[in-house]
View (tube, rainbow, N blue to C red):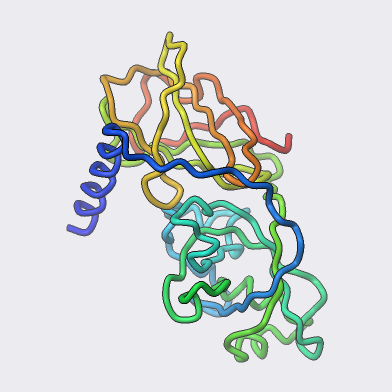
Length: 262
């Protein structure tokens, strides 16, 4: 029933866009300066944290290079899901137990309550990521501290040897197509997405639905599809020509030949 409810919610939001109720976000240059925040950890002590998360990456959170770099963030960084995929460096400050190195995390989940509420900037890290901020041998002791003052900043996402991929979400049809972006380096986030049908000349705008998921309602849609994405942080654009084939299938993932950093 929960999956059915989620499907209905996504479909309804896509229809709202068709009737002109989409809200467009303005792109901003990311701030690379260190800023104060707080951090906790969740899941098992050496685990990956999320089991799928509010971004919708599913089992991808357990796959390298994402594994153990999972970060849940407060709403000010989650940005209603448009912050999904962004990368941050996080470093704790207590010299008696914290190392000088920062841990790199990827936004894959949201922490909406507790320390994450009331406009606070908070990171709820996987147990493994949290422990990596400690000096050698003190991972467990650092985790026992509970909440920590930290500093953080944006950092380019890096996925060596990987290109941007597009996962076709379950339930997609010729009249309702939903995509999830994977392994986007550089900004990591998505501010807008468009698709172009086979033989078409116009880019058709998709809408942000939830987490890192985008969709379009019209049809019948005819592949192969080219996909154009624009990042939220800097407005950089990338177009993957005919990346989704004519005989596409729901739950399949199609990898492009492109990425922002290579």
